[in-house]
Image (cartoon, rainbow, N blue to C red; front, side, top):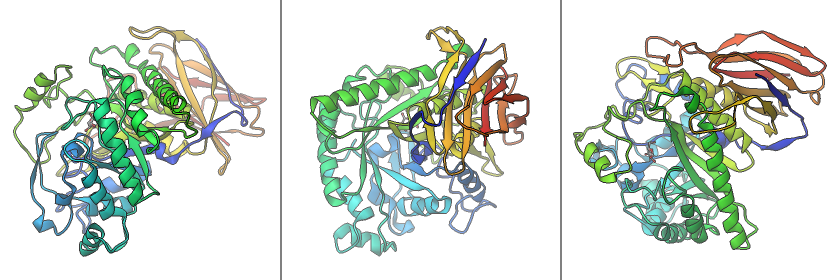
Length: 511
Ligand code: AHR
């Protein structure tokens, strides 16, 4: 087995948009309540925000956070979430069969993002609401003063506008599970009219048109083409969502699933560019991969089953009682999930020319890298580490990784490379970082990397995440999976030879 990589300073994919390392907080489960916000907890600050969680989020350095949903947004009444807390109504959240108290709303969430140094990517409700409500919300958030909703914001104690730059036009509108789901024609018309009006209120914003909910939607990829035929002139991005699972417990096939993401990205790019050609447009629409992660460990327990039969799905969920902050989607991630997250990030870096935003779904407690014990500490899941490494060392320019690796086949994929890799050159710090996964389950593989164009560069560190047991997990009591450093390498005449252990995530830094 072999893996050879050639990297050249001059062979660039693109400057990486920092928003590639975005994330997502939805009003669901324990993401907000008992997640980021838990007044009365020993680690809560005077605003009720958990400082242990904030420290971890800051370490992950997520520049943008999508809010407030997800499926939740499709029946969200934003007016309920602003103004004096005591007067905010409690509502039924139909998406997750939950009780929403609105204790945390736009003002509180904005305060939290300021504390952690991030910005909001706001979604508007295009499920049960429409153009007027989206206009009112952006007037409330971004208009300086002197109008009904900007004055209301000022009355609520926020004099300066929030100036939210990035907005999602609804969420997964193709999905029959969505409140107010739409056909492509219905959504295309509504989204383009909403976009037009929102940009009249604030021409500086950027808008994301809803793409398909995942690659197995029957309407994929005609949905992309049909909706963009309406929205193309008014929007800046199209969204992609994808979650992975290993229900079949086939690690070889599971670790090949990043090829599905690659195929998804390429198909969306082709669809977008086809519409560009149809419209004789000069404008380029980029990709916002605003929901991605592994999600399956908790589904059965949550009564959120995976089935194409939507009625069955809804009826199963309807067995759950109405609860505030239910313990749902609390996947506990293992070693193989961390490898899949690493492989996905590698795939994103290889498409840095078109993916400008990506949001790991989600951030705290709900399919998240950070978990909290309501009576105890916050803790880091396995997937925390690859995300941390790429967010930390993956800023700069994505380089073309000319990779030649031995290959294998899996149940659903052929010609899967044993090693997958991406590289980032940070011109400011003059650092070169190689991210690599050895997805072979049996053998270690020596990565031979030609970096001759990086004259004088030497090895600085090799960070590794590995465990013989692919099912090993972290818990609130024990961090079984954390990164370590290895020093087993050779470097001569601009050729680096470094061992990638079987089933491992690797970060190789040179300077
Ligand atoms: O992230 C969990 C859910 O997954 C989101 O609410 C929805 O958009 C997607 O189906």
